Length: 295
Image 1 (tube, one colour):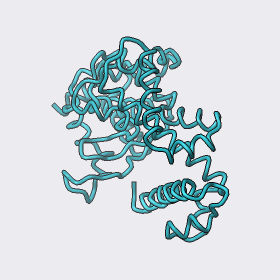
Image 2 (tube, rainbow, N blue to C red):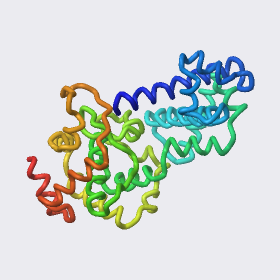
Image 3 (cartoon, rainbow, N blue to C red):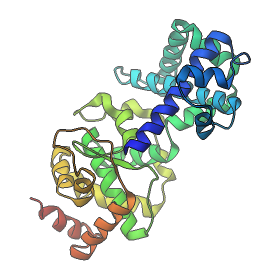
């Protein structure tokens, strides 16, 4: 992410946080847009770059706060073992009730303003359906995968899919982090596992979502898993470090310097078109030959 995008994100976050403070202090009705921008230290025109009006801000703030709450509840589950999906649901409910009991400002704001439609949107935005399908299928096929390896598998799937079918498999962009291409949404979801294998039994909520994938999607995922999936996350990281998409996005950064630069889909597609021209990407034999060129 460049400086302009980073600055936009910071302003959006500032407006959301400031409005939450004012809504809980004065109430939604008594809070004006002028109150929000004055406390945030931003121009009034800036507000309308991000929100249509105060009601649009309220809805997005509720979705943001509810989404954070669900994400925190999800991460809390990672430290626990469950015998059933029902136990997971109960644990999520207990966590959320506990958080709201401790944070009366959040409880008051959500209870006064939350509608089921907004609540549903917040939950769905926290765990997108498309992503769940991919994760579940990869878990099912690989049996054991670390967050580092999962990131690289998703990256290779995207590149090869774009070459063969001419379009991205998923809309999320990846970033050129220190350890290779990273999808931030995936990092946030599985970061608590660190370098350990993801225990998919903790993610029973994903179960059987992969059945919604098309046969061509499964074909590409299988192709990548049966080739790149044979290697550790560290080996896959080293391969991506030699590839142009990651290297080009990291220009100007030191080897241990954090970066949020986007690796564009065009950059990934063009690189894997070159791989296809040189090695081929349609068969396991061709992909294995490409992988061996880095060994």
